[in-house]
Amino acid sequence: NVIIKASDLAKSYETGAVTTHALRGVSLEIEKGSFTAIVGPSGHGKSTLMHLLGGLDRPSAGSVFIEGTDLRGLDNSGLARLRGEKIGFVFQFFNLLQGLSAKENIEVAAMLAGVPEKDQGARALALLAQVGLADKAGSKPSQLSGGQQQRVAIARALVNDPALLLMDEPTGNLDSASEAEVLEILRKLHVQGKTVVVVTHNNEIAQKAEQVICVRDGRIAA
Ligand code: ADP
Ligand code: ADP
Image 1 (cartoon, helix red, strand yellow):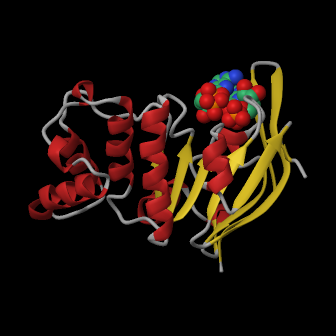
Image 2: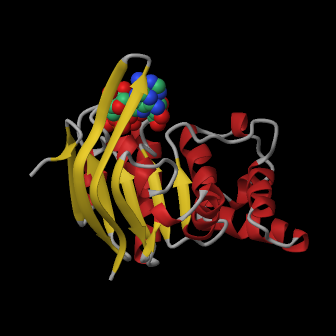
């Protein structure tokens, strides 16, 4: 049961007169409910691949299917709708709104996801409880550790109960204690049946993964 199928993906970036071939000839399949790590040296195409797999950007060539939907057949609003329905994204630098509390950050995401106003508060609290932060609902990001901020960001990514979680270096900016907290949450989400895809330099995450995709020079290394 395949949730993502990518065939012969290529991506080039044009910067003035310079063309960077970030990816070429990448094909892969990700099974529903699996835990996949994308590893490889910096600048070799991992983030580019994650963006293409999640429909955040479009390939120069090749195709991505998510649960059988060919992303080439979607316009930008169709892509945005598919992301909103099926995918939760987590990034290295958390991207929380600094002026809002943990709970309010998730409520904003719930509002954008179309959760009825009367349910937004309860949804936010339930998600904070799921990442072990029920007691930090009123804290601003600046009052939380890096690991706690990343757990808020993960809770926010779960607001739509997405089948698929795509994470770009979720522990890249964390100390080892916070890394361990985030890893434990990823493990739980996987046990709950989420499909988890993580771009990472963290060996412990890569070791826990069922599938490890090594990207080198824009290709999948053997
Ligand atoms: P990684 O995630 O493995 O560090 P990236 O996918 O971020 O690699 O980058 C792959 C290559 O593509 C790098 O040479 C990077 O500089 C280039 N690149 C990535 N994004 C862009 C962009 N938006 N514009 C131009 N070049 C880019
Ligand atoms: P990573 O932390 O995975 O190595 P980067 O720091 O290379 O990611 O890239 C972060 C984002 O910045 C990428 O998603 C890409 O869109 C953009 N980017 C990366 N390299 C370039 C570049 N050379 N020119 C413009 N944008 C870039």
